Length: 255
Image (cartoon, one colour):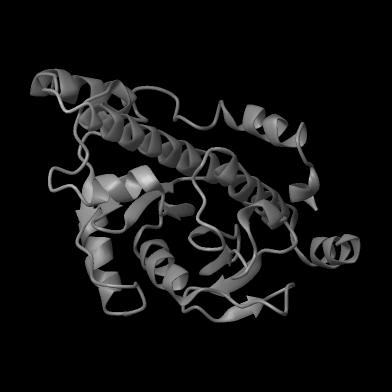
């Protein structure tokens, strides 16, 4: 691992290395908060200063194994440009979903996709995500994309992008959750709170009693108060604390 770290570190810019560290940290945080799915799912990030180049996980690594040096560099067409982990490739489904969004949304640096228990449950509900909690109201209008089977059809990319629009989060029906962000900290924060909103809804609906939905005007006002233009974007203030949280447990994500 030390040799791999030296080799990759010597070949990339300071900006790319910082992105690698933050992306590896994001991968490590996901299982700590119950949002990983064995070796599956993906988090991608644009490489600063390298147009159309992305970082993605080697297909076969657990999230808790990801390091800054082990991340694979691909282009927007899914071609592998640098793979420090030569025994592992990339997952085609990850490329299809993530490349579509990175190609269309130039305001997005990071894309996160999950298959959590609560996320899949809400994705299977016709009502989708309800404004049952302040956490759910944060997102305002949530985007939805109908299930089209395993995401390996390149033709699905256009429909994914159209359904996402300018939204921060999207529920992939009968599938899972997706969040995007202008940087890695904001994307992680959006996914974390989307996940918490789904867990709260599943718990509330499991009580088998009447649900209390706030008035639409209150929901709209709450969503407005959470918009980036209203306050400092969520995720930025928390990120140094999240890195310290990881460092207290295992610093190897930085290698």
